[in-house]
Length: 321
Image 1: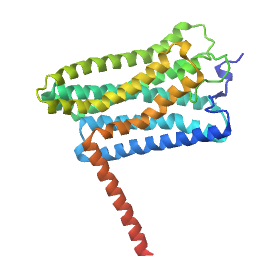
Image 2: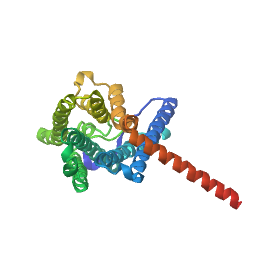
Image 3: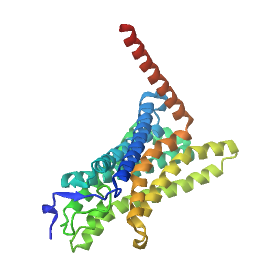
Image 4: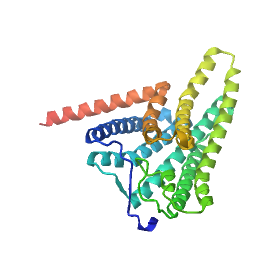
């Protein structure tokens, strides 16, 4: 029998059994992570450089892109390293860091999505009070509260999780360190402590979910009262990207964590974890940029100016030579 103090490392779930499939998974993870880094990086750069995008909507979108970048960088590099070098190990401190940052970023992302829902609610249901309710100071405080709530949730969950004695080995049924997988290794007889660890995240997620549902009920009521069809279409088009991102994030997370044990299998759990931890951060930039003309124009100007700067640099060097 071993406890948490005697465990020096954990064994992560292997993505494949053969070397060829491991290389394939490495290439897939590399492609998805590069797409996520490129998409979120372009959104951050476009919003930061485009002064006409310095609005509450794009400010919160910038924060969401930062959380997506962080979540990709938390889970994917170690999985790629393990696939490339045919290993499964992760150090105890590295596992604790993954648990903290993943919990922090996922909690912050859910809070940011809720804040973005409030932004849509105010812009559609209370447009005359938009500048008052979502001024620059209010936006900064709201975003800070979202990040702070994620940090506090992650800190408490990580501390409580790794304070439990672990006596059921060190093999995790996941390709990255996650709280539910570590709780399965615990031999603690304190069921209350295990429930408390899960309850913190569940309460935060449930509160954000209820607020989002209530806000969208009010939004749809307000949109349906708009007399012109063009006005209704414009209002719906501003909500669809956010609604799509929230639906994808919430549905995969709920199914992954709350599905019946009879439906659980290693392959299904792995597919779901890749979907909500890797694929979703890569899809978010695409979803938001497809329906937003302002963002597409800003991205086009950014790409054009960057290519022109690179061409000028090459021409200058060629002239110097």
